[in-house]
Amino acid sequence: QVQLVESGGGLVQAGGSLRLSCAASGRSFGNYAMGWFRQAPGKEREFVASINWSGSITNYADSMKGRFTISRDNAKNTVYLQMNSLKPEDTAVYYCATSPLIAPITIGNYRYWGRGTQVTVSS
Image 1 (cartoon, helix red, strand yellow):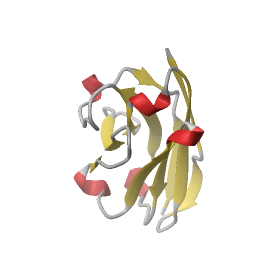
Image 2: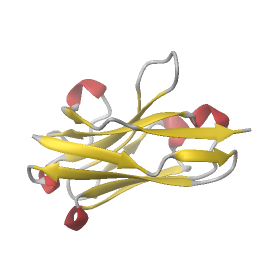
Image 3: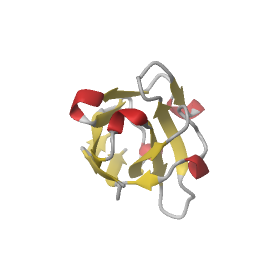
């Protein structure tokens, strides 16, 4: 069992930045790939970014490339999502999740999920 807790969300103006954190507890964090997803009201949950166990492989959704950066610190059992140049359409609840695969982009490949953190970008 892995427990995940997201933090760092909030209200920010368009063009601003936020850094999300996801703290993991339970079974060995370093064995898992980690992913960030988001879900806006009335929309399906969508892939944002993923990172393999060592941090050497990352994947991003096309709309996040160049603006978002995923990273991890296995010593702190934490994965991060640095979000820059935020847009109103980035408004959503952001979730982190674990996967036994190598940085997958498909939601079905993730097993354990956090409860999410709200990000709101005002125009």
